[in-house]
Amino acid sequence: MKLKLPTGSQTELFETQKSLIRVISLVSAVVVFIAGTSLQFLYAQSEMSFILRLGFAGLFLLTAHLCTRKSIPVQKVEMLLAFAGSLLLTRVLSQYYMSELNPVHLVSCGLIIVGLSGVFIQKISFCTLLLPVAGYTVFTLLSPHPSAKFPSGLGLILLACASTVGYFLAWQKIYLIQNSLSHEIHKNTVINNLHEGIILQDTTGRALAINQAACQILNMTTEQILKLKDPDALGSLYREDGVTLCTYDERPSTLAKESGRVIKNFPMIARGPDQQRLHLEVTAIPIFPNTSSQVVESVLITFRDVTELRKAQVVIENHRLQVLANSKLTSLGEMAAGIAHEINNPLTIILGRSTQIQKMIETGKTTPDEILQNLAKITSTTLRISKIVKSMKSLSRDTENDEYQKSNLRAIIDDVINISNDHLQKHEVHVTVDMDPLTELDCNPGLISQVFVNLISNATDAIKEFPTDRWIRIQVTGEQQKIKILFTDSGPGIPAAIKEKILLPFFTTKEAGKGTGIGLSLCRTIVENHGGRFYIEDSLPNTCFALELPTTQTQKKIPLIRAA
Image 1 (cartoon, rainbow, N blue to C red):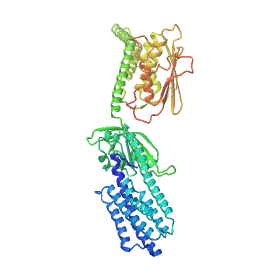
Image 2 (cartoon, rainbow, N blue to C red):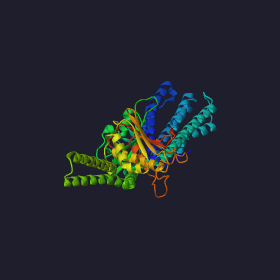
Image 3 (cartoon, one colour):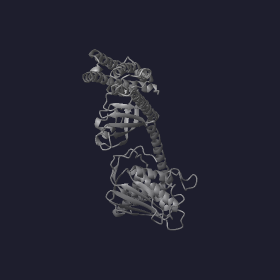
């Protein structure tokens, strides 16, 4: 019977042991005094003088007092209790012998042995307590009592049984302590090797338990976290802007405590002692004392440092913006020759009409109606050029930071068709639009235009080699909360072998050097960032891409960090 304790667990356990010894000592002092008085009253021959009773009670009280002194080791206090019990047991055994083996004293001996043995965690303490029993056993065997009222052998058997029970009580206590400590050490080893910070706090925000990862993430010692004056064991927490302090009611621990629900992956910013900004994802789990209780007893907070992840996301977002800008430039570059042709034709008309007016004025062979007719043609042609330039500007400008705005969907589609008109006419692709011209969409019009340009460009490239029947149909249907846009062309559909891969970044079916494989991937990213869905529509016999978009957005602008 030996108690093996890890160094870190000794202090807490020994303090608990001292408290237990103190309680037992106080109880023993009271019981000895009252029991001694009762025995003296009931059995005159079992007299234990008042001074003797007071001495035993004082010895137990001294033991209880020494338990309050931190400077005295628990081993010495336990030995003092064993010594006091041994003296008491010696006195009771002597009374047992002098009272002609009165069984009342035998019961008292058994109670002393069993009562004190369960407190000990040292073998020497148990042996010290049982020294009088061993001595009495030897004495009785050598000189049996001549006029015993109770069988001497039976008395020895009962004392042996009481000693055995006391031993197993002490052994059981040590076993339970070591088993509990084993589980505790195993649990602490697991918790302290987790990469996530863990803090258990009470309902006032005071930390009850902290793992090593929490100290490393917050760059604070356990003592610093325990001394935090904030109403939360995480200290000062900020909103995502890193400037505005979170109120008490906004903290995950408060929300979990008041709602009784788990708050998962709550984005917060903390500042350590060095004021370095830490991006955290915090989860708060309410803990109830039992399954039927509705009152939160404590809150378990887990959190992880996502600062490096945020930095990586910023880098990815910058790359995404660069890819989007390159995609726009690529689209404009591919259409540059056609756009130049679209602008050059109206300019030729303007030049011809203005030259004609000049000659008519010089020769004097003109009428006001002829001049007005030529000027009207020049005006309409100029508006045509203006419309093309406006569409180009709408497509090429940087719209990433634009807020959502109510936009006429038909106007966006018309701008895209104007930009793509030369490319469409060159390959004799006919475009039809089937929609309500008053349909409005809460969106970033520049990014939605980019989606439409990519889809029209891809469809044109896919069907331009067809001998006949080259067409693109745009259909818009909608409900109150959502609209669905279908881009269908005369192609036979997407082959099943590539259907799962065609929306992935850098996958292309075009020849080397003619496609980057980012067009459809960007379309999906832009639509999903609008809270919508982009997918291949399989229910039609022709190639069809579908967009589902909410008519109203809950945020002011497109989320910055959501890359494909």
